[in-house]
Length: 259
Image (tube, rainbow, N blue to C red; front, side, top):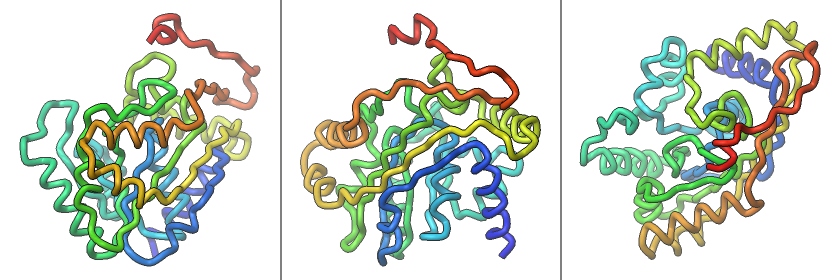
């Protein structure tokens, strides 16, 4: 009951900034486990997915261990039932970590749970999603249990958010950005935050994903990239943070444009 209250409160907070359109969310209502594979534009998209879908289904996220070290965030991740995995950034992934992830996720799927994992394993570095040589999604789909659906999620609208790498090519510091968000929430007197339009499209890709997983990892990852990037490269969108500031047009630095 308390967790439901927190979710409703956080949904209200996020709705002050993000105008979210969800397409195909009814897929989550069907019985059986689901492996949910979104693209990863920003640090905020997992939070939006969690809050916007909780009334349809309980989704268990696979999360880097560093987020479990952040106060408050740690509490909600544990309440959410998140699966902690070692941190690729710091080079601490041992050779067995992929087996650990796949076995934990496979067990959760067999139990009929819904698990979300990001195939790229990192924030997007441009307006297109790149999976490159990542293994997790391929390994999971290759041995996916019977009666489990694979749901692809196309997220758009968050490329250019302060939570993304769009403007300077660097990964935003989670806690610092979170505190900025709290400041902007109150600085806009709660109700007047300029809105960012976000679209999340849930699509059942089970049959094709399983078929592509019969090939090698490169072919499978190319399939996922084509799925995410079907609408072409997304241009970064800047939305001002304070309603009483003039509207600005933010341009990408030259070195970012070249990249």
